[in-house]
Image (tube, rainbow over all chains, first blue to last red; front, side, top):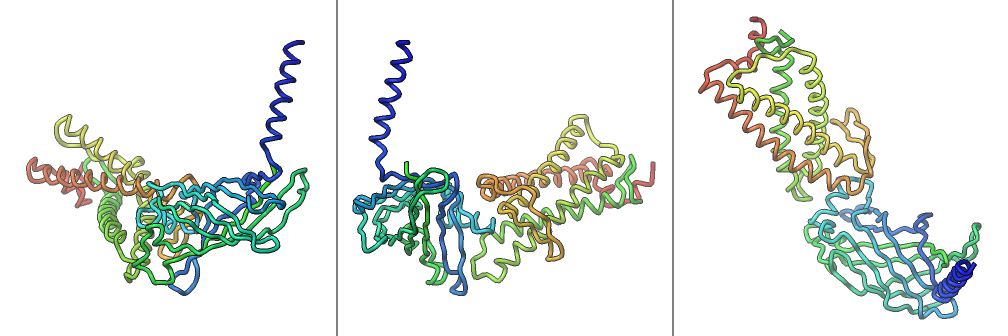
Length: 194
Length: 184
């Protein structure tokens, strides 16, 4: 009896702590349902585009409509999960000719600031680490939508894109045409409020 | 003529052996050369097309060869007991390494689930794909097993020449002349 009471007290205390720690603004990116994509788009010789994605990543963000300046996001990407629907190209991109995924298997993004620019829009600033190089990038982001989902949760989703100059990340593209020296990074994800 | 006997190799085994030898050396040289080609080289896409196509045909030929070898008599070995043992292990090693090189090469190109076109005539479907880092890992296995195969093939060649020039027996000749399989 005493044990049970003690257990109940401990549990309710834990629940309280948990509730106070999880702000209304904390979201986990929906990896289980895979409502999240990280894609890149790069010119091929100036004639068309190569599209590809990183399939394995995880992350979280905070989003409070009442306090937009405090918005933040953290992502960790498994570089080796790159897929451009051509295995030999993927192997080549992941080799030490380009991303050197053996030495740098992880890419990360960690936000340092957010500036609202309009209704459901803003610019997220943060540190992107890729190929062992860290650069501060700015990514304009848009709130796609938010609301209750059919399964009892609350979701908010965003999209954003930015251009990356590959030389900034020590990725040598000098043997390829000028148009291939930069790429567009596109990110969209849905978070489930915790 | 076509089948093996205890005294010599039949024409089927002889043809499979020499075509395989030519393909193995040719694929190694081609693979070594093509992986250093620049993006603007005229052979950048063509060389891998030849490499994949010949490689797939060699894989089928090797499977056929193993079936043929197991279903046929094998000519008697020559040399001392240790020599015969070394030859037997060496031959097993050559077959195993060939299969490892060929299968790992197949696993590179099919890692994303796309099949391999053989001379644009037919497509070998992808059977195993999407393993973690499949193309990269298979690529490492492909390279090191190919190196090992070349070393063992060099040893195989040296042994054959030793049989011919030093021991003066018929080991090399019976891999060249199918008529020796008639004598028994």
